[in-house]
Length: 180
Image (cartoon, rainbow, N blue to C red):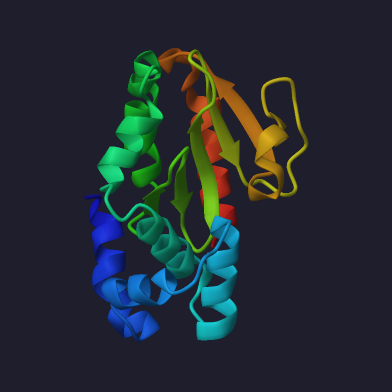
């Protein structure tokens, strides 16, 4: 398990008043059709911060899947894209110790105080990298958010490890700073 995620789980009782298992029991009694409904429920009814609520719902939904299994299943049939993911992860982790990596069913969220990067294997030949850069104009490469909607403001389409250049790293670092 990712160290940052494990730290978040370890801090959950102190920060939220309940352990992950206690939160899972509470969520089992509810039937949320969407991930966001569970997150909103925890935030509104229990006063849980967004980051913890998102992690609790993600881990509750994937009861039988470890985060590594979630990432592995995202790349089934898209194995050629996995080296791109493997190159992106240490770069974003290197921005600071306050980063949480949250694998979900179809993507991986990178969170500081809020999500600032989203890594999603979109097709068999492309990863969509979502970025939260609210005041940044779009360019040919730094496109609008597309399918990410409000989760991200921009999207970069990555088809090769070589696409991870200084410009892209700069945008990710800028999104990290914006997520303070």
